[in-house]
Amino acid sequence: MTWNLDNSRSIYLQLMEKIEKDIISGVYKPGDKLPSVRDLAVDAAVNPNTMQKALSELERNKLVYSRRTSGRFITEDETLIKSLKKSLATKNTQDFVENMKQLGFSKEEILHLIDELKENEDE
Amino acid sequence: MNKILECIELTKKYANNFCAINQLNLTLYSGQIVGLLGPNGSGKTTLIKMINDCLIPTGGIIYVNGNPVGIHSKEDISYLPDVLSLDEHLKVEELVTYFNDFYKNFNPVKAHQMILDLGINPSSRLRTLSKGTKEKVQLILTMSRDAKLFILDEPIGGVDPASRDYILHTILSNYNPDATVLISTHLIGEIENIIDRVLFLQNGQIILNSTVDEVREQHHKSVDQLFREVFRC
Image (cartoon, rainbow over the protein chains, first blue to last red):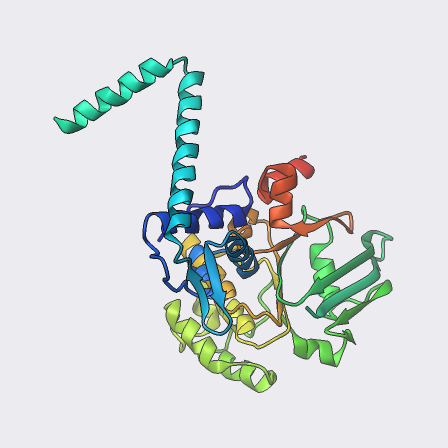
């Protein structure tokens, strides 16, 4: 598992995003136990306190929950995971459209491009 | 969180009246990995030597784990100096025995494991090893103690990138919430993700003391980029 952290943004936010992505894409299934803070920190090559902060934030967002003695688990609330997936998809689409607009493409042209790509893939 | 290191109004003047450390105040708590950064001649090594009782301060006082610098602080601190401090005629395995005799809190099993991981031959004499391998041996000995304060002066300067990763991995996997690690280095990019707090030292004073994420949130740039900006020549 690679973490690919970039240099200018908060590390804990990037760790949160990575774990969120892993939850959405099913690397972690609902109800799965997360590795310990220490193991996650060593794996990501980041400071354990930073990893701890990322997990606490995820806990605040209810994406993970902790059981006092047995560790942290992924939420079993699949509606929550779905809504997160939706909002991430919306965000990515908005960014994409914004970038295309900056290149001077209209909405129709963007849709046309996507269709073209799709046809190419189908062939 | 315990106070592991406390420096109060710490000052060091050298013979030519050059003030290397100037009324410096600093408190470090347990469970932190701290980067001590600053341009050449900013006082990093002077500060570190005073904490280790290798230099006598001109003024001020240092407490390590609640005790003033002295016999007790030497038990609590594991120090990696910026020069080779070992007897080069000894074999690697003899150095492990030597450290085991010397320090109550030394863990020879840990040392031998790291020697094995890094592919170092324990029966080689130190002087037959390359510069980078000597540095690795010294770092292994330093990290194999159950100390309260680890002070690493340029721990990754001379070693190759793959071994750097191993060393940083070692620092992380030895993480102990009761201990503090203070790392002085110029390779900021390499350590940026593993430290939680960063100190900028300039003209013997601390001009920045904040977490890496605070730096990124306030300045929208990495500690490495900020350093290059603050200390631009």
